[in-house]
Amino acid sequence: MTQEIPLARPNITDTEIEAVLAVLRTSTLSLGPKVEAFERAFADYCGTAHAVACSSGTAALHMVVRAWAIGAGDEVITTPFSFIASANCILMEGATPVFVDIDADTWNIDASLIGPAITPKTRAIIPVDVFGQIADFDPIRTLATKHGLRVLEDSCEALGGRYHGRMAGSLGDAGVFGFYPNKQITTGEGGMIVTDDSQLATLARSLRNQGRASEGAWLSHVRLGYNYRLSDINCALGMAQLARMDEIIATRTRVAEAYRARLADEPRLRLQRVQEGVELSWFVFVVRLAEDYDRAHRDGILDRLREKGIGCNNYFAPIHLQPCYVERFGYAEGDFPVCEAVGARTIALPFHHEMTAALVDRVCDELIGLL
Image (cartoon, rainbow, N blue to C red):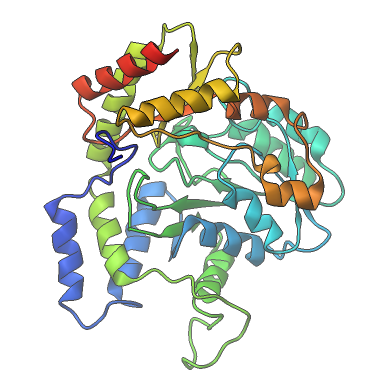
């Protein structure tokens, strides 16, 4: 049935529409000035020296892993509680993702478990800022420095968030963002790498453009590359969205606070704990059922919410239990029990700028009525 209250909706105004139309009226739809302008504005927002626009957050992750020459025989530590791209980017280059379990309350990678997972084969750590909450970076960076590891911050869900005053994406050796329509800002599809590393930025620009050098003939390719470019059309949309970031974050925060006010004292639900020092930039609003519920209960609640016209979903299914990972690595239930316990009980509720207090109340009433 048609959802009366969709799970997500992009926050698009006439400003964005006019920005896109302005590009369409030119003869330069790609490889034009809007790409560089968007990159500069984005780097300034994140407080980094460089930003490299690309076709998706997945492409951004892949290019950083490749640029760091991580490959066969190498290991990269990451979380099993994420969208699958944060682990797939490691497999794309022939390396092995090494999962460690998550914190039961913040739902981010448990930094205390990373140290024991480091081996002579470990090359990098990919913490994920889950649902907009930045991972606990201080101990992660301490470990990385001690062992000579790179840190790739997957901030695809956290644009605008802060960790002890530092912007999401700026906490590792590189950070990446995604601009799918349910994110804080959208370019339709798109992604971005941010870094202070000039060499990485130059290499990423080559990788996204079929391996061409920054200077040279169009049909001269100096390395294996990809078509990971982002068009001027997408970048014009992104620039218009970025200019509205304060407004967009304030709106999403208002909706999140309305949910938290209604649900914080509900004993049958658990809310994601916001870690001290983190200013969370809300990507989705996810609740977890209490421990006496199981996956079957959760799935039944999702079905009944949908029947009532309320968009919802489970966020996330543990990566290590995805069929392709089970087949390749032999993972089984029980390998990462905290991740599995959270993943079996999560419910993402409708979350977007059109969620009024009345709509939040309706969603909460329907959810509580099904518990």
